[in-house]
Length: 355
Image (tube, rainbow, N blue to C red; front, side, top):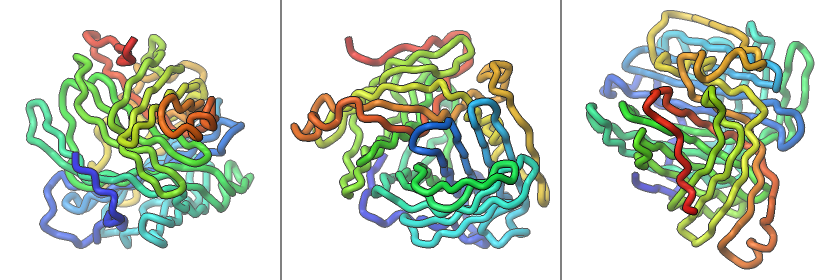
């Protein structure tokens, strides 16, 4: 993995008429939207473009603590203007700084017209992965913390999202991680003056396959993450309940971050994960469904265990500048803790925290 923190990430998606791309090429983004505290409302927004397949697709996943509503859409790239699909559209107003996102009328009763504005610099780089039994692959990857303004409408009732937080993820290239994965974490924890973001993948024998990320500060500092350790609690359905994540950075900071993941929802099978993205489906295809969050839907009943859970965090800085250590004791935060455990019966989660 090669870090690139110099402002050169090409934020706009590729032109729809771009040729000469690899067959498995994609250009995608994901945003999430949630209040800083209080109600467990989470909106996950995704869109992907696959020029070699003449396909675009995307999703909206809305969770409120009692149910999860899922909207999936797909169409032919040649039938769009390259700025959306189905009821969803977007505009890159200022690359790496401001995006507009809009969702019009649709079957799940969720609509929005919001503007995301960056509050920290982005971390980005090229991630190269050596895949067991498959060719190596590489993709550009970015994540960044921001805040929102605009409106979110649920069943016709509009709410201002002024000041709500949200992380975004941009990826472009060819990405394949095949075989032997045990634990996957994509972690985006927002605090008052910084956001902790990383991607961690471990094999089924608990060997680290990939670690990338940084602590992105609102004052412009990007502090590369050098190590992550975890001690997490999963239930019998492979759902995360709570736990501790320890993060070390290049600047010598050490964080201990507690997690409350009991809000429920965020099951990414509802977003088309599990191998459905980028599959041509024709023109103007829209699908939708609802998951009750009563325990009847779990990571074991769906076709993907991947979960983007709205989580509450508490952060303590255990090493670093003295003034920060004093100030950052049980600092409250919120964000998305994306996780997946393999469903292989030969795997058992193992803490990596040194004792």
